[in-house]
Image (cartoon, rainbow, N blue to C red; front, side, top):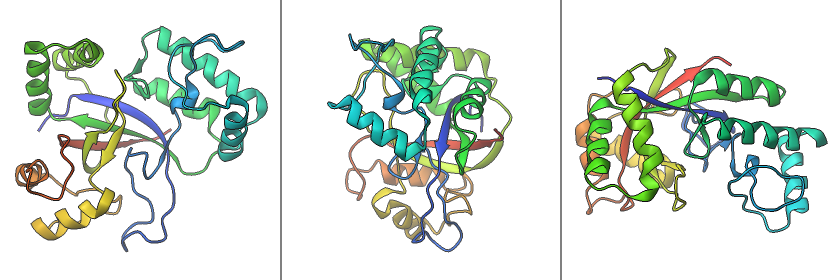
Length: 249
């Protein structure tokens, strides 16, 4: 099965002492578990003096939020503005996808090595939709276009035409849903939340691998049907099967 469209994430993985026996970290891009180092804080917008850029920043007290962020990520004072300037330039050049992901691997590697090489447990991960699901969703967007779908539609069209994902190490499969209500944003929740991983494991006799992901696609269709069944324990948003890759920084 082909997985042509990749979104690249620079993630800091957290350690979980309560994780199942095979792993202490979950190699998912779900931000309920791990830190996306291209988070909302890296983007700025509006008429804030000295802040170039465009997007969304959650805080209302910027100085306090920035101080907490710098402490959390162990950032030197000058690096925060440097990161925001760099991110603004890349976004304006069309090199960032859906707000918090990279369009190409080399740019993700540059970002990680330039700003976060000092942080332990930082990895570059990608999530990829299968060609089958990608074409289906692409056709749906083409038939029923909406304003906020345009950026995603263009990326899908490009991926379908080129079919050239990077060669990384496939480490497993995740089941994700976009939990963001913000236009053009892609914030993913994983089935690992709310004990759904254990639920799927017991229902279908599958085991999570050493990365905390599904090992193979053997029961993919049955699992996806279950996840999207209104009578199951899952949330109502659509769940999608994705391939996860690891890339050396």
